[in-house]
Image (cartoon, helix red, strand yellow):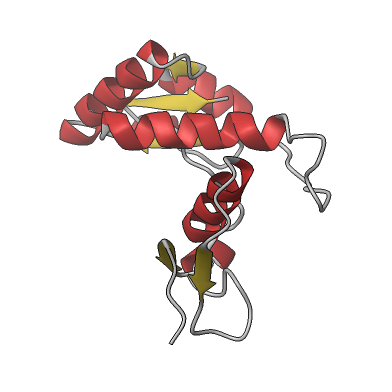
Length: 142
């Protein structure tokens, strides 16, 4: 029976990235296993290609920020081209939801993530179909 120093379960975004970085550090005893017929079949392949960087957990926010930076500046030896287009996202909230968005925005700013808080008028002027009367505040992550 074969043995490995590292066994990574799941070849989605996180598993594949972990295997990649281990091998870049010289580790050669890595096994990456996936139960599906193709890597990234489940959540990694169904996230609408969105990478939300402003998240409540500071460690996860750091990880997502670093992942986005990695995709923007792939190493010269990266084997496949990656199409990465940063568009931003618009998150809407009111009451407790707005308070949470403000906290996440502030945490994101501390990590160097470009976050802008918009007024309802800015949302209405930019996004047709959004009823400003129903939107109290929102945040935009660019």
